[in-house]
Every structure is written in structure tokens, then in C-alpha cells.
Image (cartoon, rainbow, N blue to C red; front, side):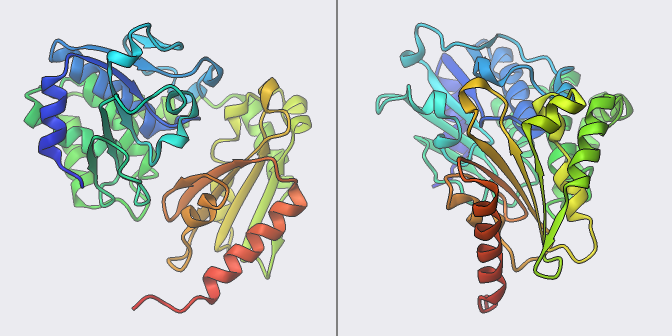
Length: 332
């Protein structure tokens, strides 16, 4: 069940919190995390935000965001804190927190993924929302927290990234009303835009060039796919997060129904792991269902998973899954 009133009651009634989001956090994850941290601080709560040490450095475009009381190790009183998951469809998408929680924890689950497993003690899940940031925004008034400029800036990061600069199909009237409210709260949208989408390091462009050069198309172009290897990262001098956005260039290619980026993960303990990012441009395809086969998840049009599978195996898997969905009878 999803119950905004129950979530508000828990956030007001509890005193100590640990906030977290999914692994490899994106703009909505980090923006929602920062905004909720600020909101709970405004309520006088003892709240810390947890991001595992191996997630750092965060992608360069998000480093301007300030997350107060950010920790990379859970506090000693972790078991006495209410856990607030933000933008996380299921707890397995944050393995480090999931491995430490127990049945005694109260969990607040705030999310907009349509495949959310409603794992919280209380849940505020709205798949019609443009972003988790939009849900956090709707909670501010019942919490009695003013929309300050600092909170508005964090929320705008989540809104503008998860709507693809207001171009994706999840951009509805509420997203534009929210954007107007954030402007009225004093954000400088141009400054935020430059942080997120400009000032691009050359190494990121060099990695993009290598990713585009490795493009392969299958089944008449239905599946457009590329692979970014460790060698590509090393040659271009790119950080792991610089692959962000590569898959969107593939989705824009004429005739593409599903775009896939397969990239090697660079952490020493992830040497044999690959991250697969999926994007769809057709309503017949739900890439989150494909991602869930390998323990991942996401949205119908954007999802991902991690795997030890080799590239040829992934090619065959994706071709098979895409073909099966395209052949399925249309929903009535």
C-alpha cells in the first residue's frame, strides 16, 4: 500500500534517520537525497545520508550538490535509525544497506518506479510521478517544511534529469507546476543546467567517441548496442561515470527500438562485472522487465543491471528478450 499520510507521520514522529538511494546514484537519486536531508534537518531531526565509499567519486556533474551530514560508513547506531530509501525500486538495488538491515528496522520507501516492490514499513510510491524528486516536493507542505532555495535546487536536479530536460514521456502537468514552484523559490536554472549538461571534460567526449565507434546494430536496427571496455576508459582517461549519456545517443538513432550500453566496471572488486544500461523508444517494450531477469530494474523506458555475462551472451540475451516482447500480443 502507498500512503502519503503514513509516510509523513513516520517522518515527523521518528527522531533519527539514515537516508540512502540506489547504487550508482543518478540525478534524481542524489537530488532527492539532498532535498530530504535538508527537509529533515529543518524539522530538527538527526538525519545522516549514506553513500557507500566505493561510489566515489560521484559523477562530476553532480558534485556541486551539497548533501549535509554525508557518511560513507553506517553510523554506530544504524540499527536504531529509521531507514529512508529514496528512488530505490527494491532494497537489492542498494546491496550495502540491504545486507545490514534487519526485521526490526522501520523503513520509509519513497519512489516512483513502476516495479517498486513496496518493501517499506510505510510506502509512498507513485509511478505516475515524473521523478522521486516530485514526490519529495509534494511531501514538503504536509511536513511543514518551507521550500527554500537550497531544497529547490536539489529537487530541480532530480526533476530535470529524470525528465530528460522535460522531453521524456513522464513529463506531465505536475512536473511543469513543480518547475514553476522551484523557479519561484529562487533557483537559477541556467547555472544548474551548466553544471549538469555543460563544462564537459574532454575525456568524456573521447569516451563517447569510442562508444559510438563500437556501435553494432542487430535485427534490422531494432537493437542498437555498444560496448565500452576497460581499455576504452584507460585510453580516453575517463572516469567510470563518464559513460553517462552514451546510451541516449544510441536511442536517438533512426530505427532503434532498444538501445543498450554494456560497459566494464572499473572497481578492483568488480573486475569481471559489466553494467548494462537499457533505453526503449517504443511502448511495446518494457526494458525494466528485461533488467529484472538479471536482478536489475528501473522504468519501462530506462533500466539497467549488472552482470558477469560476457558480451556475446548479452547480445543473444537482449536480442531474444526484445524479440519476445515485440512478438507478444498488444495489451487490451
